[in-house]
Each structure stands twice: as C-alpha cells, then as structure tokens.
Image (cartoon, rainbow, N blue to C red; front, side):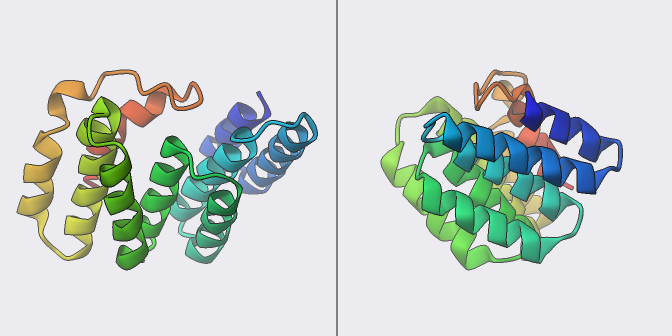
Length: 162
C-alpha cells in the first residue's frame, strides 16, 4: 500500500513524499522478511526517478534493486531505468539475460522485450525501428502482467514510444 501511495504522490508532483513512502515500503518489506518485494519497490521508485529526469538517483536505485533480487519483473524495471537513462549497454545486457532465461514467457517476449528494444532503438534515433519492434506487443497491450499488482505495466510498450 505504501508503494502505491508513493506512486500517487509522484503523480501529484510530490516526489519528496513519494521517495519517503517508497523507502518506508522497502523497510517494512525487509523487516517482514520478504525477499523480492523490497527490490521491486526500489525498482519502481527507480522508474519514477528516471521519468522525473533524475537519472543518477534512478540508476542508484536500480542497481540497489538488482543487488536484492534477480527476479523477472525487477530485472525488467531495472533494464528500463538504464534504457531511459541512456545506459544502453547495461539495459541490453539485462534484456539479453531476460530473453535467455525466459524464452517462452509471454510477458517477457511480448511486453518486456519489445518495450526495452523499442526504447533502445529510440535512444539511437531509429524511430521506425522502435515502431516495428513495438508492434509485436500490440495484441497484448491491455493484458495483465501481474508485476506486483501494477496493472499499468501492461501499457509500457505504448509508453516506451515517448
């Protein structure tokens, strides 16, 4: 719940509050002995930071998250952070690893990887290539990823085009 409150605070322009709520969510999850939740909270807060233009903080949070977990969803969030912060090499390493580890995972193959590849293409100035790779995701855009109950992740392929 604290993580969702953090997302709401950020949406309302209260980034300082969002950071505090994310920190509290991570702390509570760690105290409760949860393994992946603290990493996912750090990963989602890293995405928030990169979208606010705070690339240094975003990379720091994504790196921390990767130290806590190598879970599928967290690795995707971290790869997106690196892609949006123009650290294409790190984003590509994570994307390639996702592809290798999850070759038959629908969400990875038709949402996560197209989003990452599209963003990386845009970073290189290849808008038409980004559109082409993102077409793969079109039939799945309104699907449910179940990434820690964050329904908005299904729309990342669309969002990655900006």
